[in-house]
Length: 190
Image (cartoon, rainbow, N blue to C red; front, top):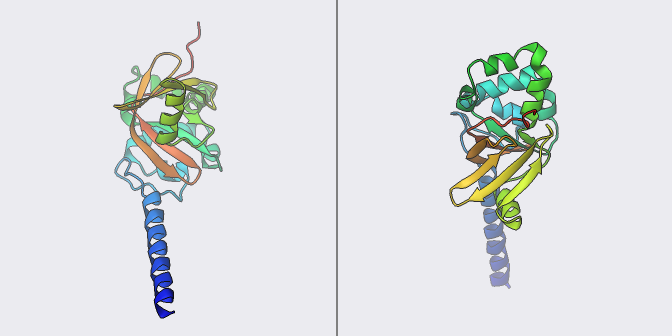
């Protein structure tokens, strides 16, 4: 009888140990912009700490989207780096940050937000199920094409701009962030 109780106790301890190890692993996040990202903080609480996303944070503030992206979600945010914004034509960011361009800026930023939590494994599964590419709608009304290859995940906007996911699966309390290397835009007017 003692042997049975001891075996149950050991099995229980092993199970608890495995579960606590899994919980710790599930909460691990990559560093982004030199800052730790915490799965128990929301998108805005984490983004403000990334040195690589100061332009994005300034744009979110200027567009009046802080409260929305602090909300419950779930959201998948494709977060362009400062370098991605810097690659836009000269003066573009300054022009977008002007108060009179708030609506246009908000639309562009919402083209980087999907109203669901999509981890890279989800994106790969959706793309595979759709023959290699999967189209998603964003909160900004844009259609983005997600593609998973052996080199990683890419996102293509309606204008043909291709962004590469450089850091995937940064878990947030209200969704997930994927860091990208280009700014996505709405379909160009004809």
